[in-house]
Image (tube, rainbow, N blue to C red; front, side, top):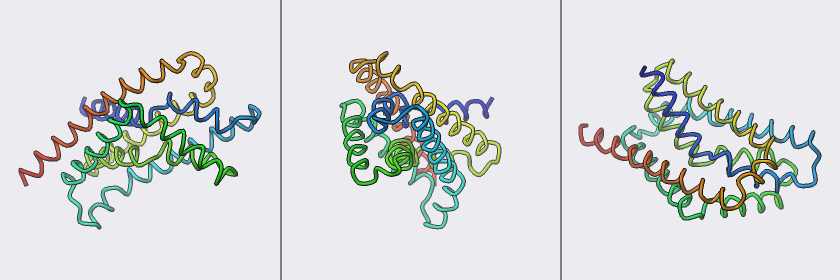
Amino acid sequence: MFALDYFASAFVTLLVVVDPLSLAPIFLAATRGLDEVAREKIAMRACVFALLILTGAALIGNPLLGALRISLPAFRIAGGLLLFSIASEMVLGVRTERDARTAAQALEEHGHDIAAFPLAIPLMAGPGAITATLLLAGAARGHIMQLALLACAIAAVTVICYVIYRLAARVERFLGASGNVVLAKLLGVLLASLAVQFVADGTRALLRS
């Protein structure tokens, strides 16, 4: 049961942070003028890049924190505050606009490899997703089973991103501008709750130590 709870927590956290549905209009803008074959290749590469980055963060996160002498409770508090900041941007409608601007700027400067930048980084495997992955890896406490479940959760989220990319035009038409705004705000509230929980857990652990 604990393993199932951990997987569910990891999956929901990463799904909320990455927010695949909000990536659909950005993907369409980034790949405008390309045919379906080219779009499919870009979508696949972006998801593979994001999968490798987040999986790498899950595997090396704890050793890296140890090498830097950063305690897990301290990182939970810092990571929770960062996630709360991202949640605030989602609720206030700032994040989507910022991501769109980042994508547009990246296309102007690095349009030759949009799969890696900006689709994989920073839209899918950005600071929020990496921070959430490190927090979840820390909660696993080095247990192989939990780390494997975290990797499965990362893979599941990237698969959902790939599906959203492939159905981007339909998703954008179905949700519309209003639907995207409402969904972002709901997910922002959920992410804020998760962030507060990370801060609370980190504070309790820090006080006990």
